[in-house]
Length: 306
Image 1 (tube, rainbow, N blue to C red):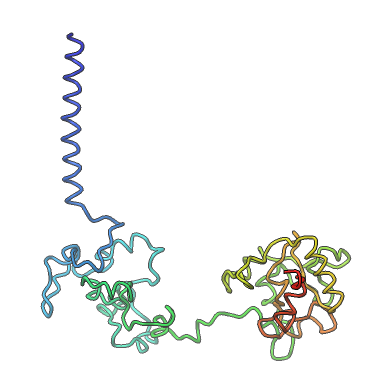
Image 2: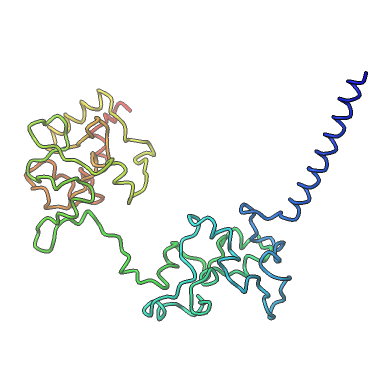
């Protein structure tokens, strides 16, 4: 009996302790409801997270931390992969003359306020939240970089095109070859086909698919089907027959899979001699190895049987 009574008392004490701890936890949670995952924007409920009290339009904003946005926007500063531009820096003189008046600096320095209309997201406005969820100044923009180029000189940031591989004299620019190749291939004899063992194979700095996708992104064209697969025996036979018939090359990867280069020639016209079947497609629209899309499909598929 004594043992049962002791166990009962222990249970009651444990329950009471748990209740107290749970109450403390709840109280703590209420006082620290805002975490790094809390979305403060477009609700109008969290003014005092950034302001000493709810500000009145036209009067002092009463920002906390002396208006230091590194502290006010601590959620984003704590997750640097989530924001795109450094803050608390003074732009160079050539940048300053390009910065529009509607992109304000704070004490001569870049801040979150420069590109983001903070007041816009303070309102409970569903339309703003859906159309301009990052409350960017000057919105809308056709491309995100359009905002960047309001201050930055677009000409200085153009992507180098690795497909422009010849200089003004028609000579091969070797450094362009090294965007994709381990070393410059011999344009007269190098091969991408593992069946031509008497030719030196071209070698890439990484997966050819990844090399293409780093600039062009992922595509499942045509017909929204993934073509980057190992062809069946029947399709492979069609490819080889088309190469003989058309005097072209539709190269497969070393593992036998179709790649972007199977249908598209990544080289500029003149890099590979015109007499070499591997030159087909260079300089054509979308660098397709056959100029007519239907012909390119026929090179691998018997469309009458599809």
